[in-house]
Length: 93
Image 1 (cartoon, rainbow, N blue to C red):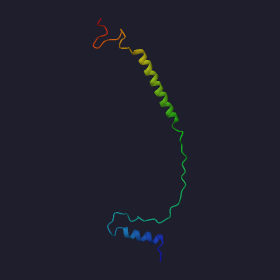
Image 2: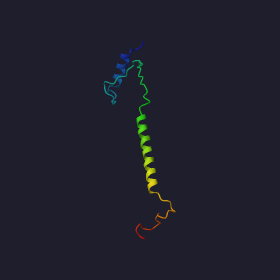
Image 3: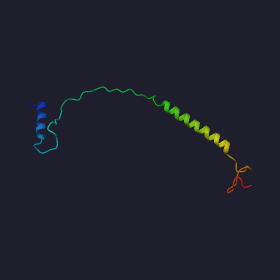
Image 4: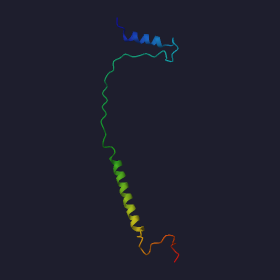
């Protein structure tokens, strides 16, 4: 004789209801329902980050240009006669 899912659930609930001093609530019941397939197709959004990439590339290009301009305006070759030697002050002459 096969037991129905209701009879199995009732038997399990009676076994776990507190007669043994367990911590499970009396409403705890095992379910023997078959799993059903639910289609959950989520389309990929692979083109969402290009604006951020463009912003980062523009920021990097701006940093390169700024660094080049500052370097060209302030760099003095070590053999340049207007360059200061080590330990020399600007108005010491």
